[in-house]
Image 1 (tube, one colour):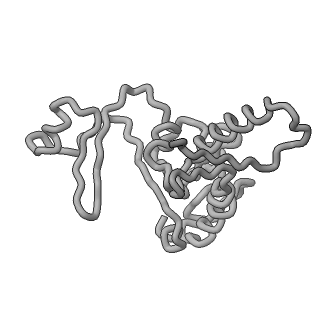
Image 2: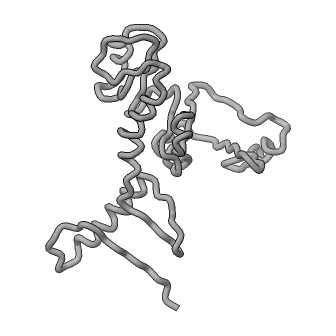
Image 3: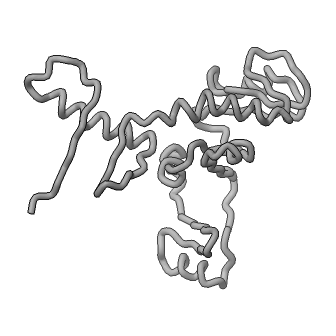
Length: 197
């Protein structure tokens, strides 16, 4: 992560825990605010912020990431083995085939290990930090950074995560395609709105 940060990318990281946890301590003001009924509680200072939100247990991990890390170029999720995320398997020892066999065919995008092993997967030694960063930039960050849809409100750019870009694109192209007189494929659409006085 440090190498990507050094390259000026915005990096998010979140750790999954199989058990409940407490970030705040009972008796503290921020804990009491949450206890009084707020759905999201937290504390902030001039240089950091911590928020705690109660979850029902049925939340989609993709939605949680999109809602909370939308401005990041890449997000690392540690310890979450479920879901069809691209996964980097970090091995200290053990059989690569046995370990990768626990996941779907296309889930493992790379293996990081202590010593060279025989595998058809992208393999990196644990100290090949720059090579791992190059791999992530070329195959993930640049691929998803392409902005198909940009939104400006009052001349200010609004950050749209990948999911929201797809929503805007599908709605706008769907409406435009239904209009009469358009015989060609849509290459681009410029839409402007100005409030009437």
